[in-house]
Image (cartoon, rainbow, N blue to C red; front, side, top):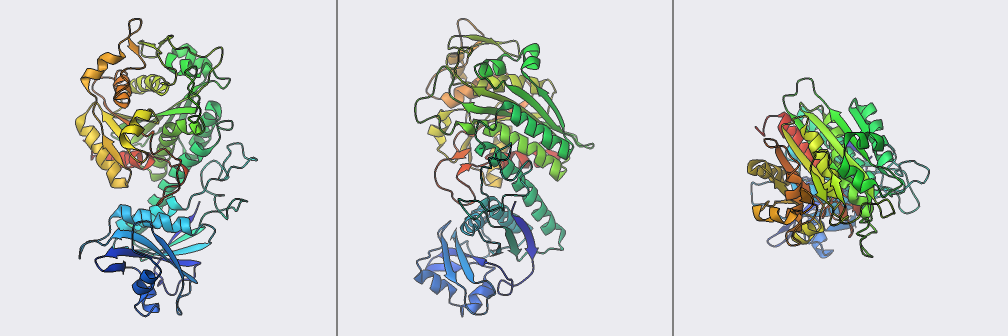
Length: 520
């Protein structure tokens, strides 16, 4: 993973491949942002004019490269847009700093060192720039010689900087200027950013790994390996244990595949914790739709259907790395949804772990089935709150687009808190309702429930189905990340093409706030 250093050096004196400065949209043209004073001085105070001549406007994500002026140690100046300049006396928004730093890091792919002279007024700004730069400096490279298909191995630490045939690898080092290396707040911000981004990248790597490499068993093995390294407890239920335990939802989804399903419990505990947070992740390592086969054009990216489980896995490890004073238990519901002679058929009835029966009207509505079993099991441990994360419905993508996830809950205050937390960390989300009138649509004449209901509001219907498996009195949230989990278009800001690690930052911040007692 890209290295992060804090530096008190001047932007003019630090040796690097490029020095990164910010430029904002002012009322009369581009404005050089704070942090770039030494660079502007090297240009005789005319850096904004030079940038405008080159077509720069300061628009968010805009990147302009130019040769450095005499007096700068770095040979290149990279100006990155921050968007609208803030009002006098105000600083730049944290997300604007994250995105600008991410865009700059992507533009410097293949470089050894970038000196980031973006606006840093305090440790919070330093955290935003560090996080954005490290997130932007990500590249996945499939390694056919590695059993998990990722060059950086089991912990996202060591080989992402290696060169490959398709590119020169990501930026190797981010030097954050304007920071205070000896200040406790700045050091803590840098350490948190490094730990957090390593886990976001863990999730990204898992999501990007091909399904012929990452199946339920190998996913479970990766969790066990990480648990040993970070002092976590794990329990893996294989197909025999799932059968004995009556996990009809997970078994029903996975029975059509030669790669049998798994349910993984991975837990971090703190000796002084007063709260327990349970996280449940949908882990469909490949989703063909089963007998209700997906149409052509909808199968190619279905290796990403385990993004929820990847986010949960990464969050538990992040909680351990950060030493949070909260217990965090992750449940990874892992299966491969394939059509075969043994696959569940539309019209079949499954007996769930909860004891309820479910008529399967559509085998492509499989995520809610594996989640239902895992939610029931998680409730048995009486956590203070449960959040499930899933690439669950195309309906949510239709409703909110490709960059925003939906939030549903059985508790209005908890739903609001999740939305506020997502906004705080820069993950776009929107609170969604669970209309009581839609409950009737999942009634079945032959079972307690059907796994499909009304087509209109399908994302909400899925949430209503899941709510049936959450114990009364436990605050529950449902994050449908079907839109932002996998970016099929070009990269932007700090978001790469492919797996994004959506929801990891939200879940980690939720764990932090729970540890601090901010959620009641």
